[in-house]
Image (cartoon, rainbow, N blue to C red; front, side):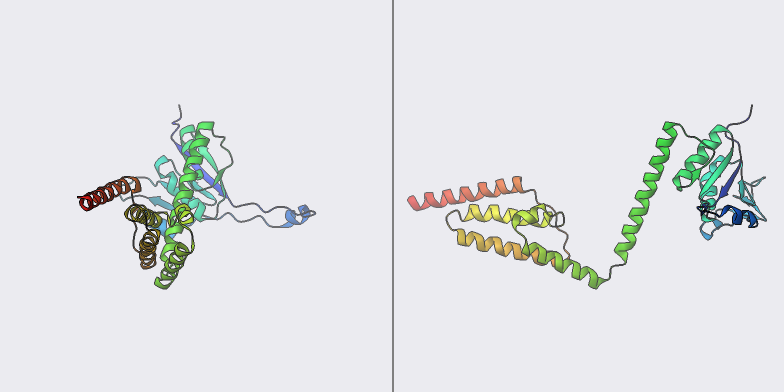
Length: 260
């Protein structure tokens, strides 16, 4: 009985051009494309030892794990499939055909799916298809993180200073409610919300003093935003409740002292 893990080959092809009306006769007159032996890209060179068109992992290997043939990659090593498919993609293949046992074909299909290559002669089960979609989603997430990281590195200090200045100006230009709903300013607004609670408890009968204290805090937070300070979100409820209790107690003691 044949080993289902054994493989024979992956053959590939590029994306076919869409035929145009009346092109059949012209196409038949064109010479057939010469089959090309896949090449190894620089990022994969270090993974293999190449002897002619045979690839080995180490000098201990008795047989090559991959043979490079015209439009074909031959292997019986299922563990090498991810790298083999990467070779296929680097050579411009957009689809592959698989020869081998069921386990080998399934592994090759998943390796191809992870590199966004289609497989022409394999029909996956629903479970295998779901796994392929998960691999593709993970790849997309990694690429997005890489792009975001690269974009972040491209900012100059001047760009970052301008961004922070604009964020600071937006903070001062918006209302407390707008800042509380703003994803980039929510943390900063939590500091102002704390100041509002304290000022109103401290000056219950003097709105002018309370407003001045709140505005001073707002200006201070704006300066922190412009300077790039990291602002930790404030747990308003517990701190506010404690501060209000302290102020209420102090005011009560003060009133009690005046009435004695």
